[in-house]
Amino acid sequence: MYPRLIIDLEKLKENCNKMIQLCKSQNIDIIMPVVKVAAGDQRIAKVFVDSGFQYLGDSRIQNLKKFQDFAIKKFLVRIPMLSEVDEVVKYSDISLNSELKVVSALNEAARNQNKVHEVIIMFDLGDLREGYYYKNDYLDDISQVLKLENIILKGIGTNLTCYGGLVPNKDILTRLITIKNMIEEKLKYRLEIISGGNSSSVFLFGKNQIPQEINSLRLGESIFLGKETSFQNDITGFNLDTFIFEAEIIECKTKPSYPDGETSINSFGEKPVIIDKGIMKRAILAIGKQDVLVENILPLDSSITIIGASSDHLIMDITGSDYTLGDIIRFKLNYPGLLHLMSSNYVEKIYKEKSQ
Ligand SMILES: *Cc1c(COP(=O)(O)O)cnc(C)c1O
Image 1 (spheres, protein in one colour):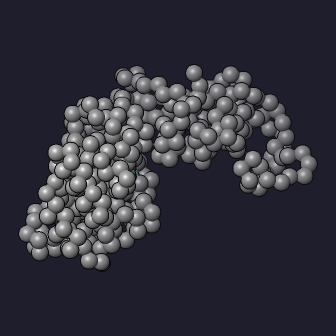
Image 2: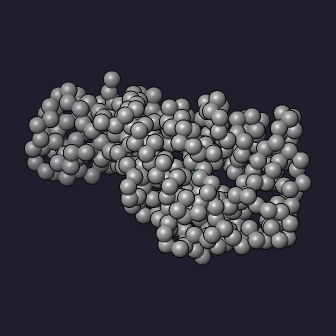
Image 3: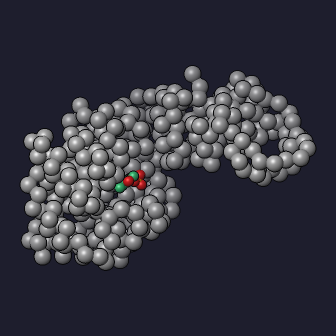
């Protein structure tokens, strides 16, 4: 069945092992892998469990629910909704938080379920997504958190390069260490986890830019695709082709490359920019914007190019190639492309256990 995503579990496992080695060399003892891109896929999650990580993270509680039989500590990376605190306590052991009201509600939920829930409090070091802004007051709230009987403050964390594109460096990460020292001195409380960001911190490895107090990172893309995300560089030694996407040609014809007559907007309300390249050999593939956005996939054969797509049709310029009706075109993908394809019910998932 096409379209399909080929998932090489063996290569993914190699990337997990390599990340464990790499982090060890950088004194990052607590790796918190984030598998949200896999849309709750249990076989992918199992690779992480079997690799020996202590934690398994996801942004959606529905996904963590699917992982409940795995013997591993689960953590929720998206700060919880007030309306989901019961599920958060039920299906995760630890959650990232930035609102005292939510942490209090988690405490309430944990008490009702006879549990203790752990939290990492998030600090915004300037990227402007979640967290207490590092220049604002936080000690009052933290001291309130410490009083909650069914909550354990496990540590503090930050998230970078997600909204504002703020690239981590020693100065920025030191803002988190200042907060750590403040909490530990003023509140006489030792923080176990200092979580210094995500895959955008990986490029700092070996550059003496990560303060030694940072003992943890939350990592997704770097493990899945072998890329650091500050500059999208490949990480040496990692597999870059853990996921390959395949789609089938449903029409293959020689046609002009420029619309014939007056043009207006397309089915997505955009005015298409079309370059007249004369007559070309064109292919239509059975895949579209409902499954993936075309800017997020790239054909492995660099002699052919994507020229556009609508919801269900992808159009390619295959001039000069031998492809014909019924042939399969293979693509590599980026992280948003992977997320989208994993989430599409119309895309078959094929698992490779051993790479040949
Ligand atoms: C998605 C996410 C991560 C993992 O990010 P990557 O760039 O894939 O490593 C870490 N922390 C939070 C809060 C996230 O939302």
